[in-house]
Amino acid sequence: MPSGQFLSTMLLHNGRQRALEESLGAPRYHEIRPESSLAENIRSFIGEASYNSIQHDLTTLPADALYERVKASIPQIAEMFLFGGFSLQMAKVALELHAVLEASSRPWDSREDLKLDLVLHLLVMSIPVFLIRECLIASYSRIQSIYPIAGLFAESDEFDGVDHRSPLYDSEPEIALALAADIPAASSTIRFHSATDYADFYLESAQAFLLSATHDGGSSRAISTVCEEGRIFWKDAIEVITKMAPQGSSLARLESHAQYEPPNHVATVSQEILLAARTYNKAVLDLLTSVCNEDDNDRIDIKLSQVKQRIAEIAAAPSADGYKELGELSQQASALTEENNKLLLHRLDQLDLFRRHAEEFKQAGGCAVDIDPKQLDADKVGIEAIADTQALSRSDIEIELLEANSRLEEELRVSKAENRRLESLVTRLHDRSPEGANEELVELARRQALGQPLNPEQILRFYKLIGSDRVDILDSAWKSARDSMNFKEPGRLFEMLGKLVFDYLDGVRAGEPMGALGIQLFAGGFAAKESLTVQRDVRMRAQREFSYRGESRFFAYRLRIANGWGPVEGMRLYFDVLDDRLVIAYVGEHLEQASTN
Image 1 (tube, helix red, strand yellow):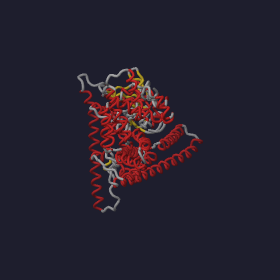
Image 2: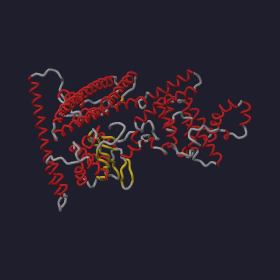
Image 3: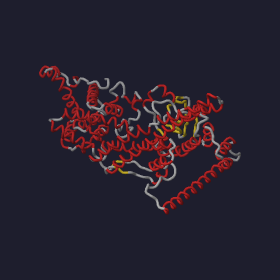
Image 4: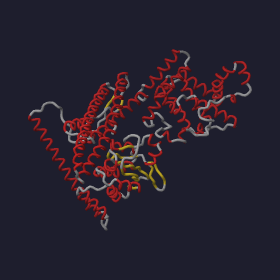
């Protein structure tokens, strides 16, 4: 019985089909037959009392009370109600489907069991949203048994990120909203065809959208998703601009932005807030496309790297032609630097614009900001953000100089303490066992303590030795690290890997969600999944599949150590937590993909 095929219900009533068809005519017979036979057979399965109770509730309960009944019966359909999908017809389907599923647990003969299959199929296929139907097939074994292919969730990874038990609230936000966008239109058609007249259609539609505007409804969910994406993209934008190494006034602007907290969650829903949310959503998307996209950064960095490499080649083998080329290369470098500065200013302007829309959204009265006092320090890019741009008196300047001096003294104290901590590491390693520490580990620790950079392979070796009870490093990681031995930011790799091996793994072992913890510890430097484009492309997916215990495994969790391309400028670290251990699969240059991440 292929999914989606509308079955004939002729088997449901023996002996009367031909007489009814001759009396009404074939077209009218085929029009009314499925519904009439479906209702009659539902009644026969669930009993007269249960059937009448459902019909009574449908005609007497308000939409919010019907929602609660449906939520207790078929929660996937109840979620539709919160996104503009309410109708009496869908409530009827949900309550009857629940009752029939309960009845199906009783023993029936083969013919009655066939009738059950047909009734369940017709009820499921009356739901107008394809993915909701597939969620029901995946959630209820009795429905699943009807179909030769047990739903899309069993056959394809296309539905990664979809929670069939709660498709609109527990699925990935972008998937849930895409599904939610289809619900009002599909459900409106159901309301129109089941309504008794136009007034009834509009009144039922009003019920649907009043239900969706409740605190837990789709409107709040959509606005909350906009808020969540705004906060994520804002942090990504700050990171992208930080990597452009702003100076002077540009740095001051960035430091001011780094302390800003975008709207966090929805408190109420109103027409004013909905308008502000739509405007803010556009600002969020503009931020994603104009600031968070690092393609321009990579293009400029690659060209500058090529220019610098050529200058080094000429310097190593000077010649008359080479000196002439140096002038052209200098002009190219100057032009690229100017282009980078213009791009930097444009992106800072975009941050200004985003903040203006975010403030308008806050002032609409529907959003609040939860600020962790520690977060203000964590989000700063460099020194404390500049004060207001008002004119400063002599005493104000003296106070600021004293404060700046105090900060510098504190930074110096912290730096000295860090040096002492690193220097004592060698001693502590010797004391870990009677025989003394592994000499290789001691040497690596000594070099790190003295500020002598380790290459990526040595960094992996260091954490493998010091964290032998918590980390596994695959052969693919060793190879990729060796291929990136000239990586330009080994200090950043050392710092982020240390946080991953200890802070992150400890949190995961304590039960914290891997995705949320990664964002908390690494912000925009962490990604929990690859795009569908990467997952579907055979070549790009293969680049992310590594051998783990004799089997090929797809690794999606990764750290963005450095952007750019090639083994010197760029680096990604792919990992997972398996059997309570951190498994590192790849530490090397940026892998091929559809867009930079």
